[in-house]
Length: 183
Length: 101
Image 1 (cartoon, rainbow over the protein chains, first blue to last red):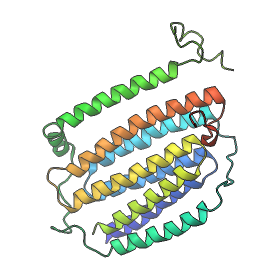
Image 2 (cartoon, helix red, strand yellow; image 1 turned 180 degrees about the vertical axis):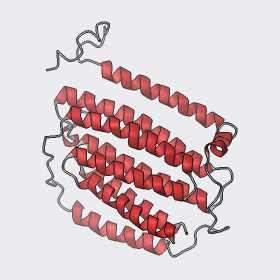
Image 3 (cartoon, rainbow over the protein chains, first blue to last red; image 1 turned 120 degrees about the vertical axis):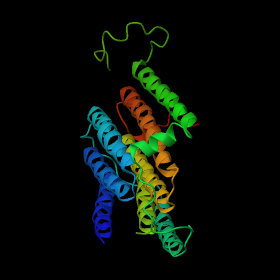
Image 4 (tube, rainbow over the protein chains, first blue to last red; image 1 turned 90 degrees about the vertical axis):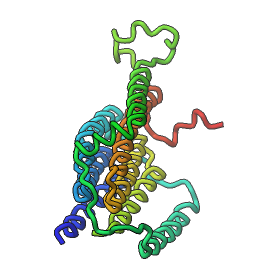
C-alpha cells in the first residue's frame, strides 16, 4: 500500500519532469525537469531493490551529467528563442493517430501476463556487495570494455575540444590563447 | 506490487523522449530527450530484474552499463554541440545541413 502511494506520487513527478523536459522553452527548465525525472526514477529503483543502481543514478546522472548539461546550456546560450513552427504538413495528425494506436497497444498488452514465474517477490537485493561479486566474475569482460569505451570517449572529447578550424596540421599552441580568437 | 505499472510508466517516458527528439530544434534539448529514453529503458530493466527474483542481478548490471554508455554519449555529444556552436553560432539542428547531399 505504501509502495503504491509512493509509486503514484513519484510517477506523477516523473511524468511532470518529462513533460517539462520536452515542452519548456528555456533549456534550463528542460534540464531541471530531467533532473526531477531522474530523481523519481531513482526512487523506483529503490522500491525494486536496486539500491546501488539508485545511488549511481543520483551521483552520475543527476549529479555529474546534469551539471555538464547545465554548463553546455549556459555556454550555448539560454536566451535565444526556439522556433516552434512546424514545417511538415501532414505528419503531426499522423503522429497523433499513431500515438493513440500505440497507447491502445500498450493498454492491451498490459492485460496479458508476459512473464511467468514467482510473482510478487522483491527479488535479490542489489547491494554493492552482490553487484560487485557478479560484476567482477561473470561480467568482467564487458566491464573492462566499458572502461575502454570511457577512455575513448574522454580522449575524443578532449580531441574535439582542441580542434580549431584552419590549424588542423599543427596544434602545438592550443593552450595559449584559449578563446580570444573566436570569431 | 506487479510489474505492469513500471512498464506503462516506462512506455510513457520513452514516448515523451521520442517526441522530444523529433520536435525540439535545440541540440541540447535533443540530447536531454535521449537521456529520458535511456531512463525509461533502465526502469524496464530494473523492474524485470526485480520481478524475476534474479539472483545474478543481470537487470541491475545492465542498467549500470546503460548508465555508463549514456555518460560517454553525453560527453561526446555535448563536445560536438559546442564545436558546432563555435563554428556556426547556432545549436539549431534544422540548420545543420552540412552533410546533406
